[in-house]
Image (cartoon, rainbow, N blue to C red; front, side, top):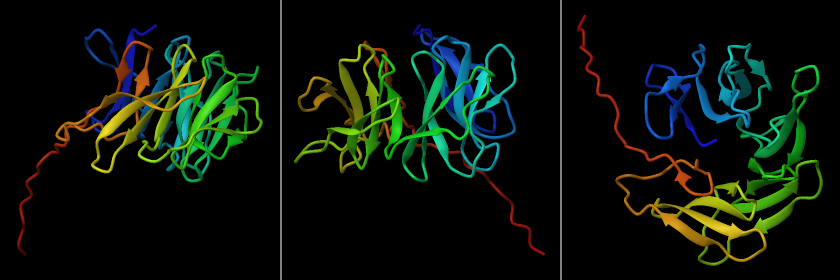
Length: 246
């Protein structure tokens, strides 16, 4: 409903998941486990959050009900599963194994358990569902690929031409009429572009020219009216340690 912005932060030590009202207000911590947790997404019904966790020593996908229920372990493997996205109906998740750059889906069965093993979708990464749930858009070597979510042949939607940007992360627009993607140029400047699903070449929406306030991460989101993205402020803590001579 556009009310919340979710994010991860290590402000309290380990990285955990928080949310804050989009209109401003106090942040609320949603996870507090013993492992680092990153990259959250709220379920379509607003009742659960999915994220990647280091609980097992590698990235795994977990779901936490916000009513206080038990954490659901979608994956628990030596792979590096990350960047999970909910299907529009809230029954399935699409995510990437960062080690192989392949995308998979898992579905919650009638028993409440998630399918094991997850179903392979395509040799591309960072998937995102179309608004009707019929397709997934993902990235392969800077190109944008569309693949049926039920399985089938992948189709290259956009491949970088001369002087054009290389796609790093793609997202469907809420109305399903365009695909947005983020890119960086050789000078490190980020930009967000749009391509009509009906065809055409990329159209520049915004470029981040101030390298003192870069948007280095691939992440961004849109509600069809606004773009949401992280801006990095390159600061760190300074510590002092005494040298003890023996």
